[in-house]
Amino acid sequence: MSDFVLEASGIGVRFGGVQALAGVDVRLRAGEICGLIGPNGAGKTTLFDVLSGIRRPDEGRILLDGTDITRRSPVWRARHGMRRTFQRQQLFGQLTVADNLLVAQEWRGGGGGLAADLVGAPTRRTREAARRTRAAEVLSTCGLDGLTESYAGGLPVGQARMVELARAVADPPRVLLLDEPASGMAADERRHLASVIRRLADDEGCAVLLVEHNVAFVMELCARVVVLDLGSVLAEGGAADVRADPAVRDAYLGTSAQ
Image 1 (tube, rainbow, N blue to C red):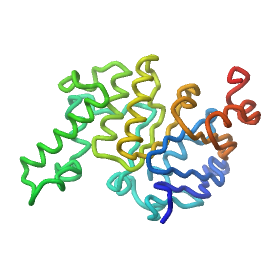
Image 2 (image 1 turned 180 degrees about the horizontal axis):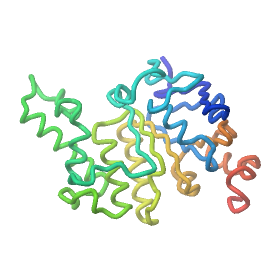
Image 3 (image 1 turned 180 degrees about the vertical axis):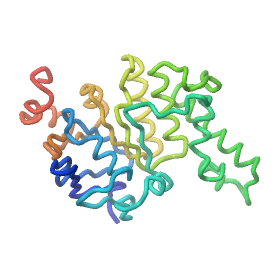
Image 4 (image 1 turned 90 degrees about the vertical axis):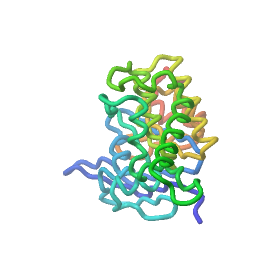
């Protein structure tokens, strides 16, 4: 059995005559936090679209826990443990923060993945209780306890980003794809975000792939970093090694990263 929760091999995507991704390999282990960086147009969002099932690759394949999911739908992937956030906020603005998390668990018939732990066939009431218990736990982890009844559409950017993360993990994920989760956050909010992501990886064994333009945030949080440039993997390795790579500095980080 493979050591990897997620394996994407030889991923290629073309838009007409433009090669957006060419032979990209990405692998994630349970409990690992991996950064994905690169200049605008490098192919990061396209890769996320492929991994999450929004776009089918022209070449390559994707395995989730050893199962080939290359042709599986986004819904199938979500039901088997893959979650994603987006650059643009995708909250249900007219729902409360708590209801955003409850909705994320609805696909299990209200169980939120916890009903199976209950003895016997769960009733509607016990399923609802399990959903609310999980939502409360996640809100507490994310520091959102005081916003339970606040409407998501009225939150400032930093808090809204945390609600997006909380909703993504309301039903425990195997793989979490985070697309610029720290965008718009203040420094203290970014520190809190990093601590929550570490806890998800360490305590729940979640494999995290993180796209973020804040290079310092990525380098501090991620044990391993993959650099994309012009649709191909330019470098991959430990954060310190990637940061010191002359090719990476020339293509993306610049002299300020030295």
